Length: 94
Image (cartoon, rainbow, N blue to C red):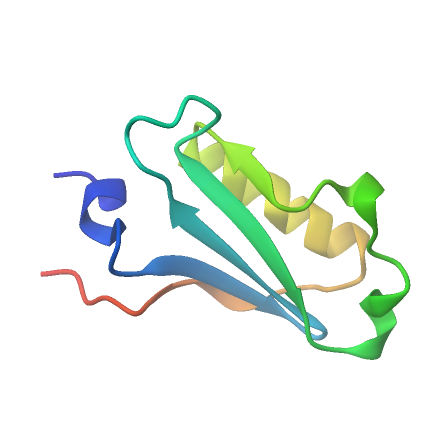
């Protein structure tokens, strides 16, 4: 069983910066636009005026490693150096 199968409908991956949290959630197997959807939640003032439609949120990804790497680069470019690493939220893996 893959991590995607384990998390589907039960949890997601998340990473936090000083003013945001980004989640990576598995999408249903029938979706043809990507296996993962990334969404950003703005929690601080520094990003409220800087994130707009050109940032393309939510984002779809087929490859989890690529998704994580791209999101981490986005955080760094936006001066949102992550607090720690990716965490599993809402589900405990066996």
